Image (cartoon, rainbow, N blue to C red; front, top):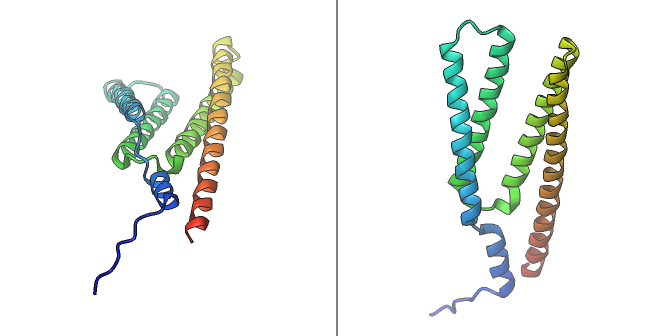
Amino acid sequence: MTHAVETPTAVELTLAKLTTQALSIRARLGHVLLLLAALAMSTLIFALLVTEPALPEHTRAALLLMLLIGLSWSTYAVWVLKNRLSLLATQAIVAGRMAVAFSALFTAAAMTAAIVSARPAPYIAAGVGTLQLGFAVHLLQRAGRRFRALQQRRQQLEKEIG
């Protein structure tokens, strides 16, 4: 008894393409550059922390936080490069959330420093942080719209198959 082999329909092929689309060369290169920059930053901060034991405690705390941020971006880049799939734009949502959280943290720290020190430089840093935060929120919103559009398309294709 022989079984006929079913050929996938156009809808099934579209769904497969949508859910297994590989990252573009440009996206991979961008994540490699992110990984290298985050590792370089983390290495420099770690070296500073190790070689300068006399740093004030608040400076050490800020540097440790920066080290954690650098390691977080490194981990994210490795995760994306390891998977090599666009994952229905999930990586853009993760990156957007990280950017919003880290920008908000920077802005809050700069505002705190500005209030405590009453000097102009931390206010400038807080202004820059506010711009960064606005840009990060914009990117997260854009990633969310793309994610929802892809999810909607996927559901539509699944209905057509089922």
